[in-house]
Every structure is written in C-alpha cells, then in structure tokens.
Length: 80
Image (cartoon, rainbow, N blue to C red):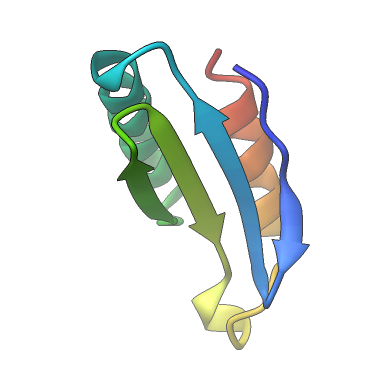
C-alpha cells in the first residue's frame, strides 16, 4: 500500500489502491477505528471498488491542515 499525501485546498489528501473491494473495506474500517481513537475524522471515499481516497482537515482550526492531520496521515500509513 503506497500513499501519496498532498496538501490541496486546505485538505491533506491521499489515494490508496487495493487488490479488491474487500481489502479496501478492511482498510476503511481500520482508518475509522484509528480516527475514533484520535477523535479526528477524515472524509473517506471508496471508488472503482478498490481505490480509497482520504482527505483530512482541522475544522476546529478554521478548516486548515494542522499537525493533527499530519499525525493522522502518518498513523494511516503505519496501518500497513
């Protein structure tokens, strides 16, 4: 699983590709559990059955990218 985090329009975004829908869904559920633990909830989209896009921003900081977003991105990358 390779990510490509980029800051764009006040979001930190990455796309992840998986073998199939099942793997993508397992990943999404892991990200959801992680987001709950960090109390920092990203936008998550599954597209084309195996591609997951994640976008995070800090709403409490005026909808900008903060260290919380970078910490979440690193934790997501560490899931693999």
